[in-house]
Image (cartoon, rainbow, N blue to C red; front, side, top):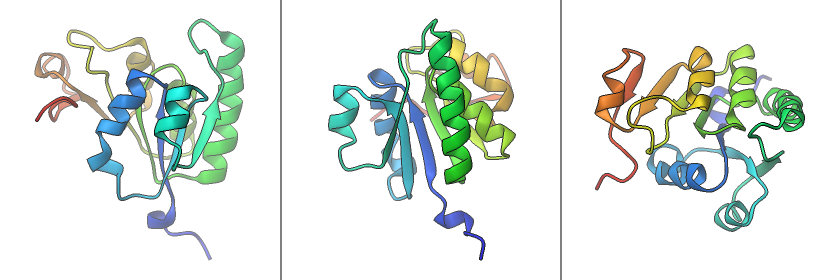
Length: 158
């Protein structure tokens, strides 16, 4: 019997540090869902996600082709195995191979751009844009630059 979509996890993909904090601030969007995290094995991630299901990716990703290929292989393995109902990401580099893999497997990709990006998309945002079903930005000024970008507030709003 095929697993129903509601039983499949939501895949949350983000780098550690600020991207992880922004994903955690979106708890209202995913908090009641079955989920699996993809992030780096860093002290903040181990502490903040101690009660969560986590798959650690290879870092660093900036200018590191070896880790890009390792993460692409990891993405192919994990996304195929888990078949998440959607992939939600706040970036950065680790998200790119996971987003493209999800798209290849017809899994919706939702991207939330960093709070720090006011005037233009980040490199990871530009790389994920072609495969994202929906893209959110945290500043109305940035949303006004493209009909593909949606503003629904920012992570620091009251």
